[in-house]
Length: 400
View 1 (cartoon, rainbow, N blue to C red):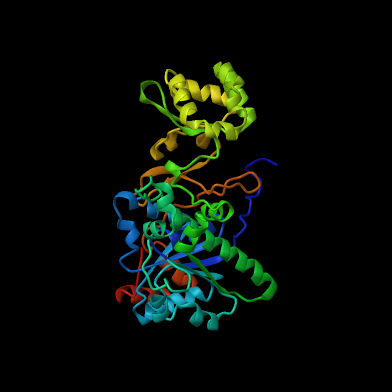
View 2: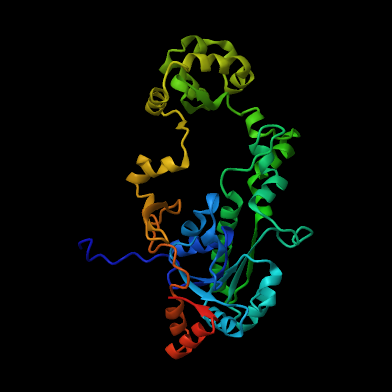
């Protein structure tokens, strides 16, 4: 059978419909994961559009990244007609996903308690700052929970807490929302009933630092911030080398130490009785690492990388995000997919970091224009063209 005649592989969540009331990063990430895996994800936006569309600076990439493979319908949920349209769509949905304050959805009659009475098979995913408890009234942001959840402390230098350089809790929180939705779908197959799934930024952050909490539980010693920590390995650091270039180099086992010493002609260090085991070398870091920095300083980063790669030793160039568009591995493996931005420009975007049957789930469509699918979805929901025109005239809905 030729490639042209081979049937297209079905994605795992084809046939699943998701209606999402989401904005920013956390909720849209959940929908993006489900959409990339084949679900039909309908993004319900206000008439003016998701505010994320208008963000500048560090937020300018949010909308096109986290809303690919989705459909957009614009509804005025403050109007009776807009809410009725939303309820008609929800009646056809397997999953509803939202990341607004609890009072917002309840006030609209779109909370889980209200919707589950209409459809006991509905799965309802809520993305919040905190799971229910003493903090759940607080307004949370990724940076807020990084500060209060120990991650900023671990990332920064001692006395200088620093947030991670990406929206780690928003993205992972959305991923856990998607995992919860998948678990609820599997359970629904057994019980016939849906359920509410909750994911939260703070609890996600605590999960991220759990290894450091458990380090304290096991050793009785508090974890030091990563830049000031006592590493578990002696050689595990960024080295500044020829022409001011930087490269990360690691030697994390006794076998690797022997290979490293042979590769660079450090026979005296290989034979030094003070450096026989990894723990010996950790204890010798104070004098060993400066010695190695001096010995490697005349090599450039490419030379060191080539030696480490040849001998199977861990290394990494210090890469800026924009440099990844030219990464040979990502380009050779199809890890970057073509994407049309909302303004019509073409770019490429990273795919989900997994394969299914040897293939990466791809981009079927870029992030939708505001209300791009309003008319089609309303027609499918049983509205006539005349009714849709009337809703557009009353600004209860908006779209192309």
